[in-house]
Length: 245
Image (tube, rainbow, N blue to C red):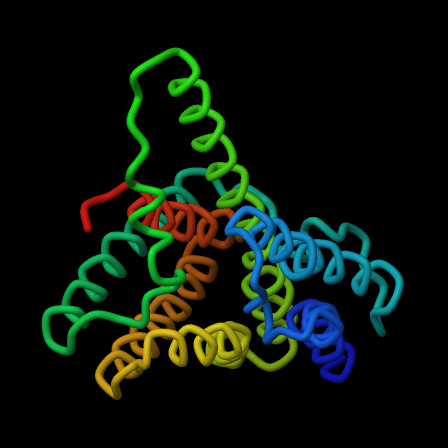
């Protein structure tokens, strides 16, 4: 089981995007393309495989028979428990992330220099501007939805659930969180080089990343559903995109 899980994780998060990056002469999505093309590449090469490959592995490549793949991935609603666990985990995570930023400082920016300012410069002065803004909003919502579903399916639904069933709850939580953090390491290295990250920025980034992973894992466990961690994850994205700086 462990070998099949590791292969599924490696292919979904490193093999496909690594091969394309090598062929493109770039570094793990660090290609000289527009932000739109970069986002589409990440969705197609990482997020969609993170959603599809665990389901295929459980259906056709698992050592034990799986009756319902959806249940095996934790995608079942547990009523108010799922909702409350997701909201409480988000509130706790929000407070923890603010503590990290207050004590240590800001993280490594996850965008290229200049792109954030360009995205915030949009003004609405006509119907065409309004339509463009709505299109951008829908695109962002789609990006967030696919990202949340992909990562929650792989890390909380597949890895945490299956490891937890065989080796215990904490094995699933800890290993799932570790693999979630490692999945982000190539992008961390790329953006750290771009921004010439200081040790404090590195420390802030890793603390925020692994605190997020642990809170998502706890939401999944306490909520008895991957929907719980998806609620937490979606709210984190919403605050990052639309909340105060």
